[in-house]
Amino acid sequence: MKNLYYTTPSNEEFEEVKAKAIEIWNDYSNEFGYRDEKINQIKNLQNISDNVMYIVAMFDMNNQVALSMILSPGTRKAISDRMVAGGNPQEANPFTFEH
Image 1 (tube, rainbow, N blue to C red):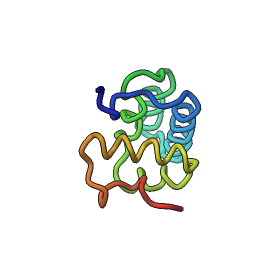
Image 2: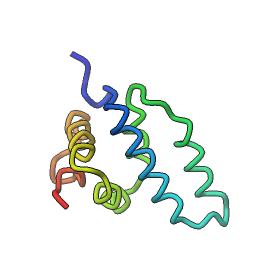
Image 3: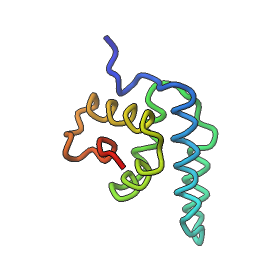
């Protein structure tokens, strides 16, 4: 069986993660093009393989927490399950917590 980490989520979950990640990046300064660089890496991604996890992995732990707080419960669980499947310990998984 294919590892859940590399399994695409529903299109709705993927689009939610993508949109919310872009919201977070839009809060960053673009003084050196950093914000645009990150958004450009995300905006044309399609829901294939582990692209949703690629988006999540672009963030440090603090921003992963921020992302988890603005995702719907179902999408948060989809990410949490993939993190566990990828070997992330539960105690280091910001998507397991209820907000």
